[in-house]
Length: 567
Image 1 (tube, rainbow, N blue to C red):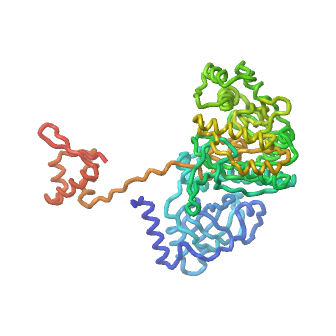
Image 2 (cartoon, rainbow, N blue to C red; image 1 turned 30 degrees about the vertical axis):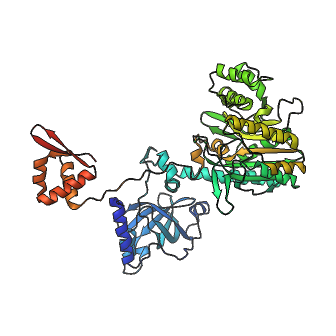
Image 3 (tube, rainbow, N blue to C red; image 1 turned 135 degrees about the vertical axis):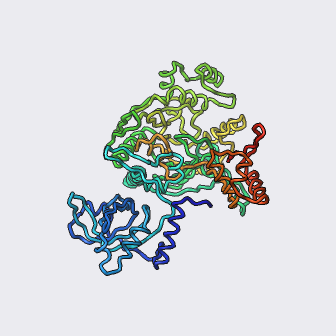
């Protein structure tokens, strides 16, 4: 592994610390009793405090330094005076350890008392210093000038997602996003708990990937010698619990779908699903809008949020529009009673890309997605979906071609999906068989396997039930004004990092490379050989090695031969 100059220097400092008898990675507890936030909120002149964190800046003033310490809650200023820190004759702790062997980014422990500087800044006068952890790589440290302009910002998206640990350290706004994420989960959990519903856990590895239309990840269980699937949804298991006698159950579930990645999709994502007995989709609409108003207020202090150029208000109630009316409004086409062939022709006529594998449900979905979905900015319930689009949903009480289903649209994206759940086992079997036919036709998102155990559970009887699913990551995007799902996931899925092939050069090879670099990467071959002062044997070995590494090439220019550095 090739090290940068800075990395080499830091390793030398590491050894110097050990030579002084200081463990750069001590095992013992450090007795922190205050955070930077607590100090600022409860500042008391002369109060003794113990803090720990990363050293983020130092202003050297000779026998004293001003420095900044960053912990999990912010930054606090330190004043390190040589004679205060080192009361005895030996000043090594200040002169050597702090000033020469401590780098920005190192974790340190500080003991001291609070005071206010002449310019009114809250500060810790340091009288105790403990080395806690040596950093071997320098942090990227953005700087803000007097005009508020940021220099050397760590803002490359790929680097930020790949090295989130660095991103969180140097970009404090990123940490705030994830604090809000926790607030969202806590708010939703408390809303459900207060309503008397039970948080549960269901299997991640499933023998049949059910509960949604999606392509699963497949694995193999060696002991049982069976294929297993990472769950695409937890719906069918939660319904089994309603059959078992619970009035309301919910789960924050990690789901996995082997599909495309973009700014709103990650192959691993978090969904919340809740099922409540004796309710229908009308009740669930009211429940959902109250839930989201509560969550938005808990996260941001207000029901209003900004997302890009839009101001969104999550305050209940939300508009309600049927799927049929929406498509009719934006396309002029009425989907009611249309055959698969008519829907196919209509979609083609609208310039929508469709193919023969698509059934009625998929065709309607494509029309809605292409022509309608993006128009709904404020929270809007799209209701009463065609039966073909909703194989797990109860038939509409007023129209047998429709189902009692709604999706919540925000800024042109689906945030929530809910049903009056199908609890008729005979109807459910017919819907599953329709899905199998679609799978045989070539629809790779249709479920080609019937979950017989789930049908058996329904045959034992499930009460009328309404269910709701919310994409937590997508909701988080809206609540924090992030257009990319990667911004609200600590560790989004990334392509494998391209490894830099490190080539170890011999001393003679390095000499030839350095001579070429000093002459604009090319030299007359004879002149280069003469300047290298290498023997014939060493010259031949060096040039042969560089050729094998594909670092040089030789070309003919008239009567001369030119060696060029190409690597």
